[in-house]
Image 1 (cartoon, rainbow, N blue to C red):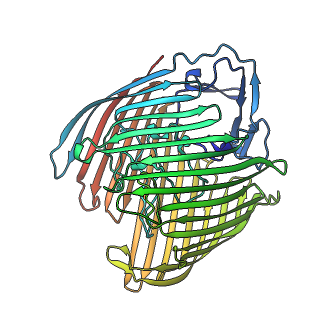
Image 2: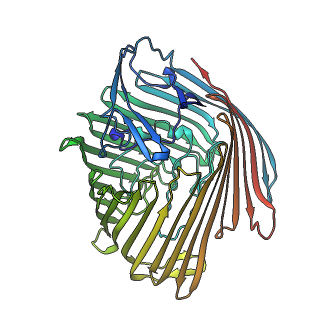
Image 3: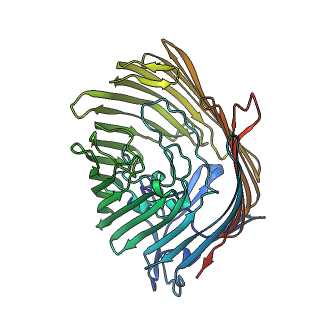
Length: 571
């Protein structure tokens, strides 16, 4: 967790164990977190602790210590204290995790091949607050595949990081305010090509953690075994705590996953924050500035921004400014749009009427105003949320409207067969959605969107459900349909997804994920079988396949099978 719980790395998982049982009085759970999994100062006798329990059937969350509605869910400044704990040890702080892997690759138009491989991850607790990690011949066979997206915008899509090596300690590389359109270090640039296909990682090293009031993140990685196309990356991030919740920091990156020119980036950020404004309110101000150095580019290679946040339960206000130069390049980052000045502001009210079974009513609006660096308006979006209702049952429903202006300085190829001509466009979009409480064995969600779209119209439809068939079996599915009607014709973009999760026991699971989209006409299927012999020691069987035009012919275009064994030696 960082920024006092405003940011938290939910995906990463350390080594721990747990058991639960149901008895005549209810249920009981016992969770064991080894001290070797935690970072702490030797001899420390006072520990900060925060406990959160979700009581699903009542849609209730209980906290210890007590907190209020304005606190971030994982806000650590209001943690309780346990004293008198003595005699804990982290050992020598060394974990060694070798893996062995066997598999098979099948391709329609290429030679099939057997795979036999091995690699190693090692972790060492350098100090009580700093840990190091080394990876050699890294493998991500057990990583969940990305959810497919069909891009109906002019800008690149964002896919979250899911690989454990990069998730561990990821918060130490966070830079700038949390709600911005620029990420100077985006770990998915490493070990993946722009289409999300894996590139082998040869080796990598990492240092993350805290030393006194300093937060440190250092990463060095080399990927691609082809020496002619070898890519080397380095990222350094350091920040200094100022008071309880403020900080001042810097970042440096070296390497370019976007092309051949050499690229470096440097930047600084400042955060001024407190969770005790007017006794218990959160408020923060963030500023940052970045400069890139790219071979062949000079001038207009900076980015800067400021953001004000007042994120509280009844009143939530955000406002900010961002400028990104046309020659600004983040070779290991994510920058969806350059040559812009972006002004944005939003406000939301969330009263809690405690009537008619309504837990909270939310309404508000916002504006996004984007120009180029010469002041020419490119995008303006005025959004209005007339209402969003959340009921005591956990069900939700909401309605929104957006008035949008877009200026295209060149034709926009939205579909292989259709383009939207350059010019200025004003259009308005409407949306209505609902979500039933996921505490139920069977839940549903859905939304519809309609209105004008550039020089035509667009209708969106999304429907999904989840069904806990029994304790060990979950089935979920969703379907997205976007119909775009233009003067030259119409097209439909569909994505279908199916999840089937089978839990044989708390330590033996099978996850299956199937998805299909009508743009690629590919059906992707991933199944991952996990057997956790004990935390850190596991057997994984992973199968990935792709079928082209499955309704016309059932023929595997490509498939991969992996049998992987992980073992953890802890000292």
